[in-house]
Image 1: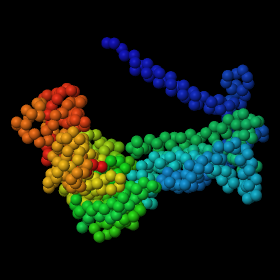
Image 2: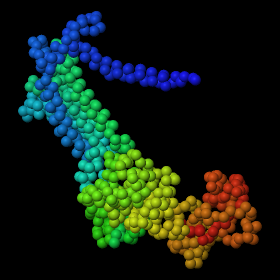
Image 3: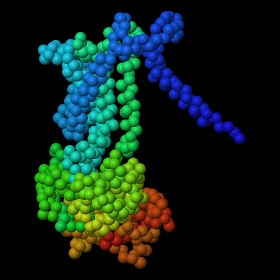
Image 4: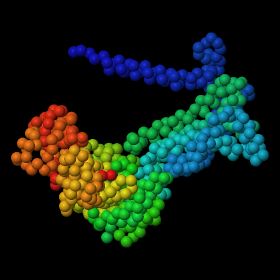
Length: 277
Length: 361
């Protein structure tokens, strides 16, 4: 009997590819992981000489330390999470009707409106946010959580509106028309048919808004400091002094994003997405 | 009483007039097909009746009820879409039950009606499938079931078979015709497929540029076209041009520039001395493999002409010929017993009873 080598070769190739992609994705994180537990790590040693979880304990507020840059990041973490959640809720509450209208109706200057949402991301951010700071100072929003949330919404809305309108556009109008023809009013047709069909796209766009908010630095830096210290700002201020501590924060920042990615994957695998063709 | 009546419908898209004073009545229980090339206004008509498009002028009635300003969900019209438009996140049962749920029909009653409508479309036992688990033909049956489960006054079908493959399309034609006979719902059917229209319709309405070109039973439309557009749209038609030499009842004689005389039938509009066109259909042309003089012994010389084979295309069932007839060409079908080569001379006889003569445009 002749042995067939092809499946073996294919499998080997797949395995190599898998390991390579793992390295590319998780390689940089490995270094973060090592740094976060390195008590003592001098050149030219390839691995830390002494390992300890002291920085994790400090960061999570279990132990207190007087080392420079070592603060508990728990308040900053929950502040960031809270801001991100509120940002997603408000941004999506604006983006869903806007995206639906842009997709379904012929809106005068529709393309112009779409580009309007891109503006905060289309220019260098510093000059924009310096202006925003001036305006917010006059309005009493500078250094406040609502001020930071408004900035995050402005930055995130482009993902919200663009992805949402693309999602609604991908649903054939006949889906709603069929519902109308069997007796559904326009709003019943929207909530019972269009919204469930758009759910994966809407979720994807809220994930983008969420991660954008969690990650937002420039705007928060200008508008939020010194009173609103989000996680990225804490990371920035500590990274200059303490690489271990910065690594811990960076890893914690990754957690919500990774969780959200898994959530998306679950939803995108949902039964009916295949049927949307 | 659910007669569908459109009165003086006008619809404009910018400068384009999609419907130009359309008047159309579909009698109770009748199946009428709107047939025409794309852009003729058939889809606009359908969307006006279903309520997704507001005509600029005119009124639409179901029986005595004016529905022109009534929203789609209150019109009592069932719709079947070209892309089926089944809701992918719902099972077959949920798709069919949706309209009944909105009407607050009790669950037991819903189950009963779903079962019965699925048996009408021959899909018993498919309640728990998702649309993507069904073939195109099955999806279209579910779409039809969803449209008829509410027992609408009017059923509208928008090119329902055009996404199916040829074999299935043919089978579904007969089924739609049968279901219509069984339920007797007043039906408006839109298609651009003339065979489909002929098979299923009680009446065909041929449209062009938002106007009705002809309205009649399938055989009327095919055999007695009123104008050049309808004659050319139906069947494989080639035209021979000439001047009307004489008319007698519905018979008329056309004289071509070669001096040949063609006798055919006419449905009016053709006057003595006017320019007219004879619509030659392949099935009305007989081929003789001998000169005209020899043919005259066995048949009348009337409508017999000498033709030269210009090109031939073997299709399997028949051979598609282009014949040169003086200065014109006609399309003819020959049987596969004898295959003619380009350049060969034959005699053709065009059956006067199946040769419509229409006014030239």
